[in-house]
Length: 426
Image (cartoon, rainbow, N blue to C red; front, side, top):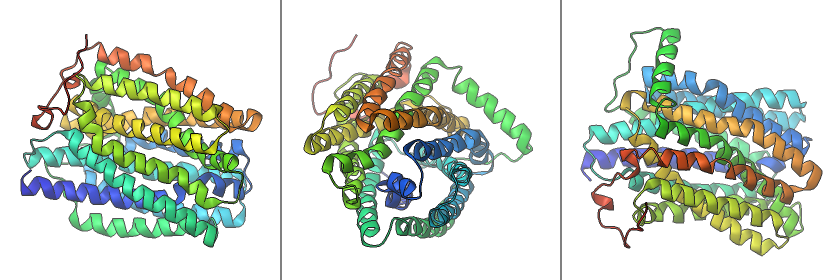
């Protein structure tokens, strides 16, 4: 890797480290935080649904910002929005505010995250292309997973410990502070390499133009369309399961006030993510097609969720939580690479935001529905139902595979000599 590409990768990994560390301070306790504020299970997951609704509403407009003004501007706006709305979340907890205020602030939190979605990955891919990087995207995205996994482990463990030593609100204040630090870092080091912002059109015309292009290169291209359409099922269930596992593990453990155990769910997933990120490119090398790995990981995820929902043993739940996190992490960078290779640079941020939008749509409807199932029948049953829902998205991945897009079999020099013989596939 040449020095310029290495610098780009270092900046990308630092951005991921800071963002994930900030976010993960509350990941292990978020559901407990909402319940402590007086919300029911249904209201807590409905608040999360409003968050994802905010992502649906703002994905395209913020994608326009990234594709017409700049990826750096989009990132900076995201850090400012998230730091302010995180502080507002803390205030709502202090005031035990009515649900309507949680819904409003959750939507604004979604706005903050949409400034990140698509923009950071698009910045990376464009900058690597500009600096003549010749390695595999899986390798870089895999390293990104390792970094986010480590920072997620640190943040989730510290968040749980700090919450238990102080209260459930302190991790939210720490998160807001870290985001402000990342704002300063990005302002000084990020540069939109390989991308020229297009300011020739007004915001409305730019929105229409970018939306048209994203549809043309996204939904109208079958191989891309089927991957995007599969997103709501995996993403919606994945978001719900991540947050439902906090109180569920406490329930299996037998102590509902052991916040450090709640942080264990996020910590375990972070370590699984590190392992998945390290091994993603190697596992990719075992198969002739990227879609084979993605489909296999999806099926394994369904099995893990069903077992998690059916078990009454804490240690067995922890084992399958590790497996679930690992297969999710392996599929992530391969899916990212598959999509990125099928999207032109000029529309990359918006189409990736479009993909995130569809994933968020799943969260809008699936989270409150599964939260209601948890109220009625318990967390275990809701996880089993979630596994069945995720299964619905797998036929769409097979449909994308049948398009035989060149990106499905793309290999770089990093992947030319896999660790083990390729599995023959039809």
